[in-house]
Length: 299
Ligand code: GRG
Image (cartoon, rainbow, N blue to C red; front, side):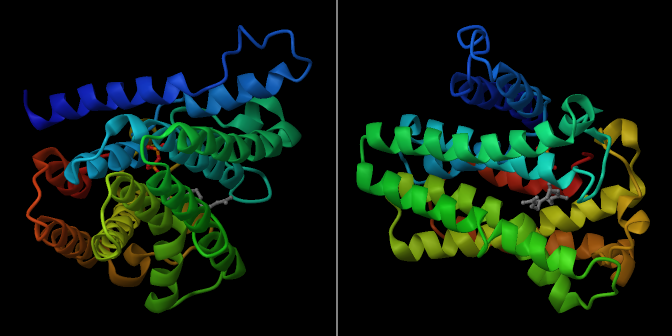
């Protein structure tokens, strides 16, 4: 099996894990609030690369951990990621009509339900992770993972990055501010994913710190590649509008440095991350290939 076939297979496996933690609409169909279950499942089951849950699992495997303990955290991180997309697409934020190749949640269910769907996914993520932690083989490690998740999703992580991004809306920003936004807005959930995988497998503080740094490089590279695809790809391939940064007057690595330098930066950051992870002397060839493949991703 080549890497791309292996990736497809593992994405399907990750998808199966996520589905196990979602609300069963049939069982709950008599609840008066049943539309929220439908909207939650509509947004989370719309596809997506499932990168973050895959990083949880593969980093857990890197450190030789118990995969079962990682499952609820894989679902939780994808719920938080999906909530951020649902809220980011709202009229008050980017006001986008398409995401993951289909109508955005608010476009289908209305703005109020869009807000509530994001809120519900965020809350359900913590309910899922907490239940998982209570049943985990190593509860102390699971609690550490839970604390990482809360920290990286919040004001010191993803939300903090979004705040700085919005505060600078329509303004030209310098590279330092851009790095700050990218590290938090995009990097924080990727850091959370890899750190959770590591601590669930019993990685010590020094190893976890190193994983955090490597994941931060991966997150920055991921965001710069996202900016490149925004100007080089098509809405059919991406499943969302292109040229959105230009339309929203957003400074990116592409607008500040040009495509060539931005691509070089993606390469450099990715290589630094892989080198750092390889320095542990643990083996997970698929994880290394996965990180490397993000340089060439088309969506
Ligand atoms: C808290 C409202 C709120 C927002 C937080 C993460 C975020 C800020 C907004 C989401 C939109 C955005 C451009 C995020 C940057 C990270 C990024 C490139 C997300 C897209 O992730 P992919 O490509 O998406 O993994 P799929 O659909 O494949 O899961």
